[in-house]
Length: 235
Picture 1 (cartoon, rainbow, N blue to C red):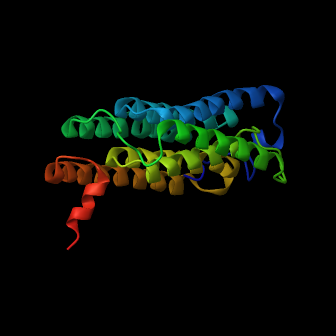
Picture 2: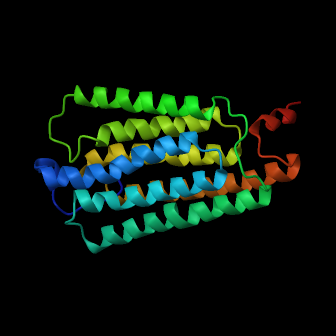
């Protein structure tokens, strides 16, 4: 999601005008946690752990803008809290309920194994760091890790979407993919009105809600959440 809030400071956030060492440290710490969570999600097979890791990443990212740009009004804070509620509480609870209904615990036999997935994620992160280092920027970003963390998170979501067979894991991949887009949007905070961002957040919530219903029906029909079973619906 491109950015999340609109701060009342003008066209360019103050954090982009000047990014002192202390600011870099405050932003790099949560982004470092995001990168570690990416590798963890690629290497874990337990579904509950995957859901909790995605929720933790959403909560971290929801509060990240407050570190980058603390001079935000009350409305922005309310939207941040709403984002934490949706990404950190509502969506994880929906996924956990789907998990209990389906009575599954682990992702079994992924298209790409867990260790190779972690290696791909680590390689992608290293490539993103090299790419970001050579990327020309007209202004100094709040953190040198924003672009690498964005690309790494997008890659993580893409790998979860394409290399896992359980429908719940693919939903989480979609959620992580959106987190990566959001991180990149931190560079464009002042460019997008917050109402647009709130609409995107609502779309995400509705999308997860609809997919949860689909997951329920898949489980009732096939007694499995393996998306490969959907080929049985072909005429």
